[in-house]
Length: 331
Image (tube, rainbow, N blue to C red; front, side, top):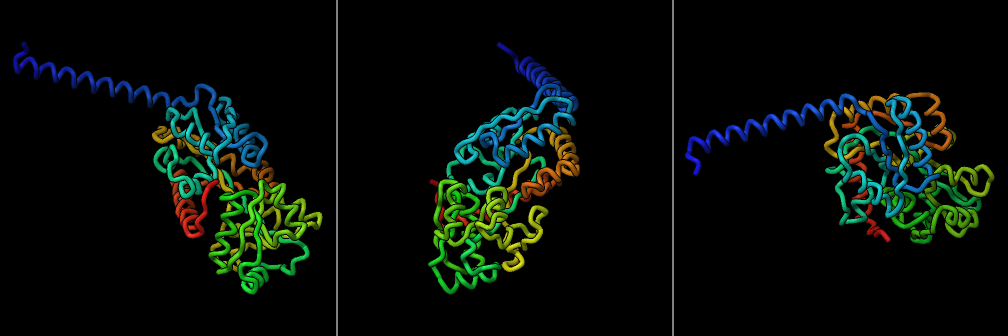
């Protein structure tokens, strides 16, 4: 049997040992973050290879490899509206060796899927806003519409008679149309297609009257005269199509962007977050990088982790409101 004094002494010894172990663990973690990276970094892209997000991620990975002195390896984990790849990163060890190319889905999925296997605000640490790609508002050449003001007037005159196409239910094109309906005070019918490859030919054939489409998919048809572009969904004009005015010139604050940025698991050491932010922000300012992504309609961004976190929170609230008002449901 231990006496009271012996128990007290034992407790002090255990406490001292615990403090020592915590100090050692802290020192090891600090050393690890100071030396970071010492091995290859996995960069999860929650889409299959070849898409717009994958292309930008590969450009960024190549230049991060040079900046960090370690290979940054793309790991495509597409499927389930980016949920598969995002969950993988959210549950990864927070040591800076697993990163995510997060997208607009981080903001829209909470409103579409009430039981996500992660909480983006809690389980992910924003690093930097990489880029933003607006959509382009297009109509058939047979439609007597050349401006956003013309389109709103036509939609008001033919309430409930105009059909707007999308490349899929609950996707960016669909949500852009719902936001337009709300802000313009018009009623239109949503017609979802299985991808832009089916939606845009239907638009060119006047089977539907308008669509918010990605610039890479729509602009070749615009240049060939098969469809007409009347506006972009960014707040300002874009380098890829400077002749097109923003929808926001007619509907103030209307903005829809396919955005993406770099994130890590929550609790990743701040020194690692700051290092990744510094290197990535520097890459985003390089003329060669900016020119390359601008060719596809993407504007390179940048900024601090806090600024990116605030942007994600703002986007999440905006799209939650749109999804709720329009009654949008994920398929």
